[in-house]
Length: 334
Image 1 (spheres, helix red, strand yellow):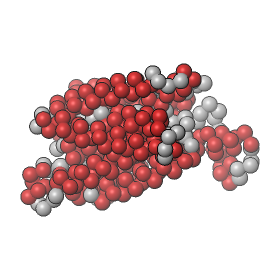
Image 2 (image 1 turned 120 degrees about the vertical axis):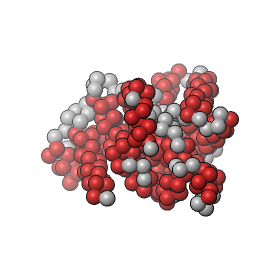
Image 3 (image 1 turned 135 degrees about the vertical axis):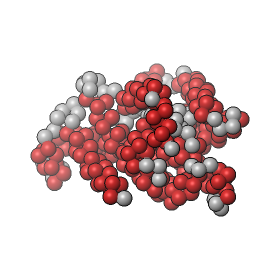
């Protein structure tokens, strides 16, 4: 218990440090005292005020919220499916949400307006979750069946997305490709409001079911014998994770491996109790994506990399280490 309290205190402090670190570093380094002056008085320096309040701050908030949401979903998927490689990106769910968002972009001028993107992305994520679940059920929910099904669906969704991209005007093509690679540069106030609301509401609902999720990790038969309505709980959790993934993907595109790396790390650090693991993953995901986006903005300045490139490199290395040291990870999973 004392160790868990220490972990959460450290995470909260590190989250604040990540926030200020991200404000300081970028194309133009801003000194800490200048940051505090601008926080106290927006008009202290017009140029710095624009950089901090209109460019960096919205992007930082969006990165923290999306990182928290994706890590929470990865934690839930690994618990429900009892699969250490399950997360929105590897299961093809992010791909389904991306396809929905692209369709929503075409429909944005026809109805619903701005909200057509998150709505269509939500339904894309929900449809892909049940497709993955169906494919996995045909293979008796084996690790191979789940991951292979997710990979197949990812390729399928990517093909449809690329087909729709061919219909975009040439002047939009560059922005669309950046979005597909995971991009936070277009953070807007309305986007931040929608994503923040969906992630916080979704996380609260997931945490309410943390006890049931703990029991589900023991297996469906045991959970049913303990009085848990497994199918109902799973459907509710799938619905909530679809809401989170859909809004995150519609705002930032395909940001992979956040939901894979973070839950693994905290499962090793603080155990597999979802009442601890879920909020730890929520905070850890925010920190991870906040730092990854700062790195993407500064590593080869003046060029800004899509944040999905950074998370993809780190995730690929993690995958490699996972397979090399799979027996040790299985010990942590148990």
